[in-house]
Image: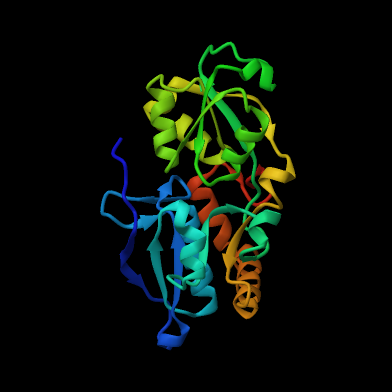
Length: 261
């Protein structure tokens, strides 16, 4: 699996409506390496659940929209530097991040999970049980925070992208990883590499790590934009647009984590 270098802006500018002006254009920041939420497809276009929801919100607000891909480690600095106007990249709403950015209402619910090779024999989730094991996570994420706090006796390895974590687990270079549950389910169920492994233990739902759900981040001074995004999110939930996008990617309603009706 090739390592993606993503410090570039997506070439396509997707317009909605005929009256959008330069002042009405929004730039959506996302990572582009976190399938099925955000990824680069075979044509080189940034797409995925996050991106499609973001574009639907732009359409609802009647604004022109441009997608900008940015490495995860620089995604909040990029927003603060005004490289884009919002981040829609499966970012957990946490108190620590609220010190830097403001969040919309959650646009989906979050949980983390342990994933290990099948028949790993791992049944205990304590620091003592994990001592000496090699555990991976994506750097700069709440999953990385979790493993560093929960398993300090383990050999912890952090990676720039989730794809690289998955690759090292599938290749036998990791004993275990901790990641966002929904992308991991997609990897396990829909890729050849993912057949190596399985989710073990209970979902990790501690609010210290998964926060209040997954939100869209804006600069703290951009309250008007935040309120418009919240109103647009409510509208696409009500008119079925959200469900159409949701059902393209997931068998459950990720907004509620219940079966999709």
